[in-house]
Length: 274
Ligand code: R5P
Image 1 (tube, helix red, strand yellow):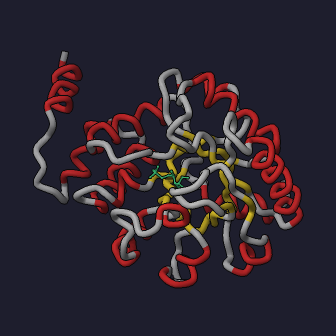
Image 2 (image 1 turned 45 degrees about the vertical axis):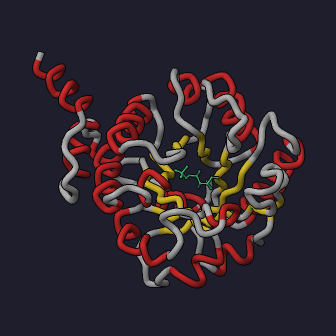
């Protein structure tokens, strides 16, 4: 691996922990102005807490301070809107543009088991071919689409395929037996958060993913749609980089909100004392 590739990867995965907290704010590329991202000003206080921002070029150009210390991983696939066939994506951003924006990585979705599967996989191969010429890491995003069964067998297949085609890291969803997904994938895996769930559940999911071998998160809605987005990203970060429990992380989240501890967290506390 050459200097450029290693250097860019070290801007995404902290050299201190080998893990990453990526903040995913690319949803508008197919969903439009979704809840929490209607005005991108709302995410600005979150950026310093993230290792890397997963974002489109349009938002980088219009809304991100070029003096930021947080690295950029640029979404380079797109095409259909939420109203169309999601899998009908192509590569829509050039490597030249990614380099111009000083991206530390580029990311695209693949649709294993869906319509257009072969084209999106071929697109990944083409993107990797070009990206490695410039030392640019490629993130493959798997299992997008409501109809996909998100179990270890399917996610294991999709993540392994992404790695075999040449992705340098993979984003997927957390599932039961996630260790199996990690075991079968020779490159780092980060988890997406998925649709908004209670903060306690999102933190438990993060803890379980890290314990199962995930190298971090690329999380969006469970952070920016939280009642305390800054509290939530700090909480997620404490699990990813400090290895704290979900219960400890929940206190970090609560540090900036008045929400009371959920019964499940109290139960976890009792279990710890047994
Ligand atoms: C998925 O393709 C989107 O691009 C998001 O980046 C990804 O789903 C992560 O965001 P969330 O945690 O909201 O699922």
